[in-house]
Image (cartoon, rainbow over all chains, first blue to last red):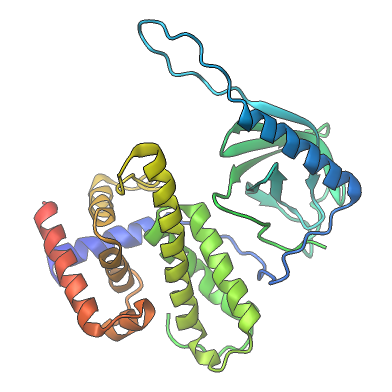
Length: 158
Length: 161
């Protein structure tokens, strides 16, 4: 093997070793998500907020002679109903799909202990277009990141 | 990733998912996209189950992931060109956080290669596939695999010191 081939092999394996793959259940071809009316209403409300915010970007402040990079303002969504029935792993915010950085799953893929089921009410804060954090009155805090290009949930939850 | 005698999709998922996610990350440089691509590959497998040749499920999944990665990469490249102009060498967000300089340099050079050459190198030097297996995965001839590999290695030889 040449030096370049050896370097390739080592670089690929080093990079692949940084990819931590946690166990997950087999995905189902049925991608329906059964949502109670109040959760659907909450999603529609949130989607409306997101659409309005996305359609009306903040006006840029007049730039001083030394240009500044504006800091994005977090967007807070109160009364957010986070699906917990099959564990805390995914969230739909507006028309975008997010996944938890550290999923929390109870026995037999159920709501984790100490969380309401099938939804936990709380506040979802979009800290950036690609990341969000959920907090509730019980002190739970879960960070989510965007699944770019996703058009549906990863898992069926009934 | 060899042939499988397992006939249970759940077992295939457990056995193959980690390697396929890593393959997709190597091809795409994006963990989120990689997970989606692998997820879609398994959903497609489950939809087609039972396969005519269950022993070839591993190969089917690999082809599915490579094709899915190509589609995802095309969509991402289109979005990036809208924002950054005609640049295909934007480094992926995940790359290099835990890697030393040597590995980052090699991976950056690989990312500058044409897509097919990248695919051949990843399938040969990470997945450890034979020329015939790479040809089957990419849907090309063995001669094309050989040519891609030698061109890619020659280019890297010139770039890496």
